[in-house]
Structure formats: structure tokens, C-alpha cells
Amino acid sequence: MEKLQETRLEIDLNALRFNFQVLKSHLKPETKIMGVVKAFAYGTDSVVIGKALQDLGVSYLAVAYIEEGIRLRKSGIDLPVLIFYPQLEELPQLLEYKLTPSVYSFNFLRSLHQNLKTQGVKDFPIHLKINTGMNRLGFDPPQFEEVKQSLSDRETLKLTGIFSHLAAAGMAEERDFTLDQIQRFKTAVTSFEEYAHEHLLTHLCNSSGILNFAEAEMDMVRAGIGLYGYGNNAEEHFKLKPVVSLKTPIAQLRWIKKGESVGYDRKYVAQESRHIATLPLGYADGISRQYGNNNGIVKIKDQTAPIVGNVCMDTLMVDVTGIDCEVGDDVLIFGRGHSALEFDKNSLSIPYELITRISQRVSRIILDDQNG
Image 1: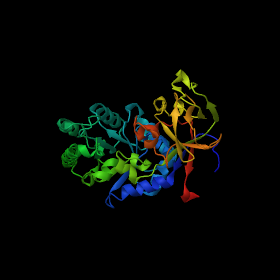
Image 2: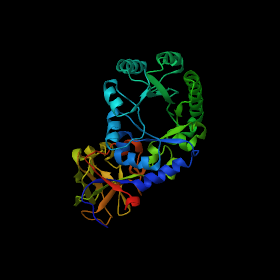
Image 3: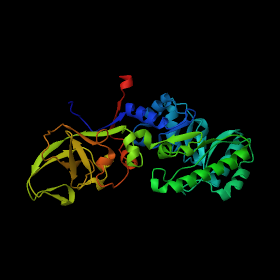
Image 4: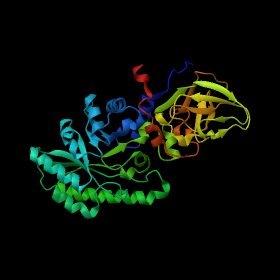
């Protein structure tokens, strides 16, 4: 096996295509898919993933901030791009790069309208965010009439879409809550479609919604974490393949004696002679200190090894006693064959956080059988 020369994050586009087809198989043929590529496409590469999703036939892409949308546009991606958290001061870029804002507050709605009207902009498309129980962002039912009044100048702003976010679609015990969210959203859609006198593009489902709630399918779904190989429960995880694999080589090996310690603050003290491998990645690369001291498990030569001692900024140490390994051998931190859930031995976090935290200083390697 070829030895790795550096820490890298392998991005498997074949797994991405597999996950896309799994999600698509749960949908009606006419249902549109919005690919969520915020946060560097969940810690991968938003341009690479965005182009792959465009080739797969998604109808929209979605990002958190305008800067992320600009990156997609500059790469040549011409799909509609929804911005979840647009900032008013970036309105010129919103216009220049033809990005669609989510509108979730009166302050943004009224300021956006006034700015566009002053510039003489007509029919500027927006998607309205409705709060159905997440209680994070969006308009509440008692505000609907005021929203409609703010949209009464139909020449400047064009309401083209309406959406909300499911809070617990991956939790079977919260099924009643999710069904209530779905009903609230459908009521909101009826209200705004009656106001608009036309059909609006509706989207409610996240990945767990796609897999568990066919009744919430609407016109379009937002595929996020599911595309990258993870769900929100064991059944969802089982259906999908991790897209990213974080790998690194062993930098050094040493034997320590009983009573000797490893790392800062001497958090690990050997109870007997142990073989310790030092790996060239640490919390600056996204592996949090919380995974030290036997909380994180890596894989070497198809065997598991715990992280021992505190994770350092640029390095971490693992106990490889009993594993036939040498300097330069590759170590799978998490990914295909050892998921983020298996790495996170004590469920200290969630796959979302683990994969999105991998530093941009870690090299990205694209795996794509389709292109050789």
C-alpha cells in the first residue's frame, strides 16, 4: 500500500453520487433537489461538490453567506443559489452575482425593498423563511399579514419561494412534533399563495425529512448532511456512504515504560509498557482536544487505536500496542470503513461538527472513478 506523505482529506465523488441516488429514490420524479453546500460543502470543497451536484441535476444550491455564493459563481456554476443568511451591506454582490436571498426578518425585508426600489430594480426574487417550531429564524403566523403588506409593492420584490426547517425529523420520538411542523408550513403556504395569486416554490425537508416524511416532500427538498454520508440516526447512517476520509501518516513511533506519560499535562500515564504513535494533525486541523484521553478512536491496519493524552495543536498520539505498523503507514482518522461516529467513541459531538471542522490547511484530494 502506498504510504501517505501528508495529512489529507479524501473527497469521494462516487460516494456523493451514491448518496444522491439514495435520497432521490425516496422522492417523486418531479420533486426538485436543492444541494446544500454551505461551510465549504460540509468541510469538503464547495466548488467541487457544487459542480458535481450540478452535473447530477440538482435544481438549486444553497449556502449560508453571500461570499460562499460568489465563490460558486466565480467557478462557473450558474444554478440558482439560495443564501440562507444574507447581509444587507452585501446587496451589490447579491445583485451582481444573481443570488437569491432568504428573507426572515422585517428589518431585512424592508431595508432590502427600499434599497432595490431606490435603484429601480424590478422583480427581485426572494424566498420567505417561515418559523414552524425551530424558533431560530423566520416569520411567525401572527406576522403574516404584516409581511404581506411589506410585499404589497409587487414590482420590486417578487416572492418566488417559501420554506421552513424541520427541527427533529430524524427522531422517531418527535414524530408528532414534526407532523405539526408540516401542517403549520402547509397552512403558511396556503396563506401566501392566496396572497401571491400564484404557486410558490415550496421546500421544507432536510435529509432526515427526505428519508422519513414523504408527506413533507413539497416542490423541492434540501439535501445536506445526507449527501455527505451521514444522517441523524443509525438507520439513516446505514443507508449512506461517508464522502470524506481524513487520513494521515505515522510521524514517529516510540515505546514508553510503565509510569511514563504522554503529552501536555501528563493526562496519560502508562500502566505498563506501551507503543505510541505520533500523528501530524491536531486541534488546528479540526480534531478537538475533547477527543484526547481515549475519546477518539482511529484505525491502523484494520485495527482500532485510541488517542492517548491531550490532543496538541499540530499533533496527537495514539496507542498502537499490538498493531504491526511503522513510520509512514497511513492512519484513518474517520471516513469510509471507520465513520465519524466510530471515531467519536463517546458521542461527544455529531458528524456535522466533525466533518465541517477540518481545517483548510489540510490538503483535499478528489477521488472520482467517473473521471479516471
